[in-house]
Image 1 (cartoon, rainbow, N blue to C red):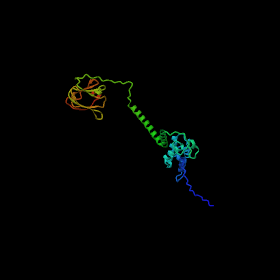
Image 2: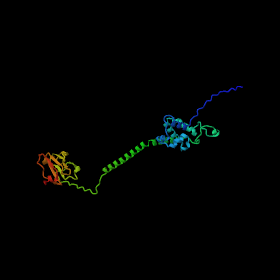
Image 3: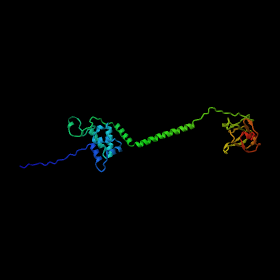
Image 4: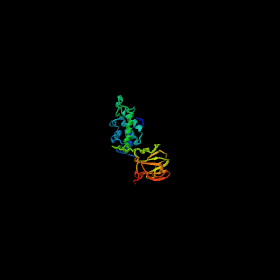
Length: 286
């Protein structure tokens, strides 16, 4: 009796890898094998969190947003498609519909187990802040340097600002004695006054009794005053012994020193230069 044996080709259905297996294979196979500890330092993610991702132990990581954020960075570091890894993890956790079966009659069927079936859909806002935190954590040196530079700039600005404030702040003396010079008894009625900023302290006053050109210079030869004085005009010489004068008509200028009329420095129509406008010189005491 011949038995007819029917030959049946057995077709093996490829087993779909979990997200953790894809991460582990990418890390441990190929020419670029790497240790978890090395990658953890590069990503600034705790080593045990990466180990939990490879093992599918999602309950070890406290929040869904952290799980997905860590997985995305880990996948990109290993050269995998981060969206595919994140989608797989969501399916395995039961966050979105997929291969994972977690309740009812299918609970005992073979297939991927759900590590956390009751989790809610992750908050996009939380995920954004987690990624931002990871970025800052990975580049903390840059942020620390920038913060130090800002603090230094604020300190320097405050010091400079404080220094300027001290320089600008006026110093008010306790007692200020201002001796106001008394106006002499001019021979002529005053027509116009010049150098009035020196009026309160000036001890030498010039009055034109005739039209005369008057020039006053300081010790460096800089011109302090230069003008033709008309009869009756008055000029208050700045206080001090450093001023010299030139009179175009020396006899046409009355010189008053501390309220007293000094001797004339020259005759009418005579030009006199280098006249030292100190009280001692003008009064003939020097």
